[in-house]
Length: 499
Image (tube, rainbow, N blue to C red; front, side, top):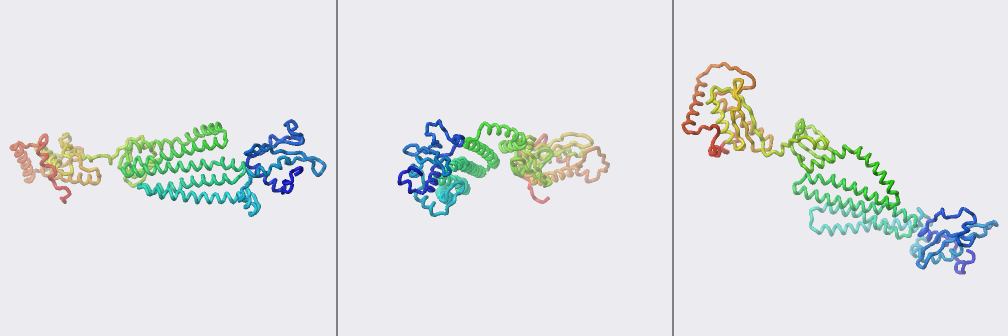
């Protein structure tokens, strides 16, 4: 405070040093490595031997040097103090870099304290900035949501969620950081604020919200079109995209914060190998899920067989496929295994095959002809049978019995309905076989001893008379009925009536 102009001598030294401390915090971080270890200071810096340079403050009109000066102390020695050459320019520096008048008022009114290097009014300003940022982001997103909902759309819930969550958080961070940055924080605090990664976090949340919005919109669109498989595929794809986005944003933040990216990337390379080895099965199952979603061999709700397991597919997840068996147990099969197996999808069939090998004990060829003809007639006439799939043949003879091969396609994909149709056909076939005095036989050799009674002789005569009538009318149904006869018989039987 020696040798200063008169207007400077009346100033409070404590206020001057506070002002200088604040000014230095705005532009200057002391580099201790440049300080001299010699009590005499730097003697070869071009300055007087009693002065040393700490640094400079940049003003609009030029640089102001911050000088130390070695002066006598009260004990007969010498000590280093802020040079009067610097002290007399503190008002000039304060005029450009100091508090605003309102901040000065708050500084004098509020209790005198500091927190993390911030003055009392700056602490209050940080709190008010956070509140203002939250209120401002809420008002902006609410207004944007109302305007967006005025446009006709089929996705109001997703749009509302995007504005209320990701966009609101993004605007809150951006506004708060902008307001706090104008509170005149120290250079160290500003560096910490900008390197904290809050702005990168805000962008990350916003981009992930956009990905979620696009995903949910397309999921709803695909479901409305009945493409459930593609809709389910979007979720794991969006998750992988988010993971990649997090890694990219993290690397950009690390580079901006000053980390050695070579070391980071090398660590990621080694870590990636370890993660890949540990997550090998998980990745296989994820790829299997993508294969199942894209190839669509089965869908949830399909009844299928794979290996020895038969059941209904309940869910195709990212890791495994859940199948409800006929015993009502739930089997979880890893997608990597499920996608590589031979899968028989019963729900994908357009009809159900009716196939039987019937062994019949017959007395004559004419008897077999009548049985074959009547069975064909029933199949062609049945409303639940595709006529072009009917095949009834005497397939083999052996072990004292004739083997009839019955084959037809049933007009249903519901297995329970098919069982009803098969039961009806089986009962009709039994009636035909017994009406011709023939007998159903099981596998193996069978010898039957019986006396031909009056009824048997009458039935045998009826069979001969029927064949004779067919021959007279030239209507013998061998090897098959004519197309006209098949067309006349179509849907002529009553199905569903109690018999």
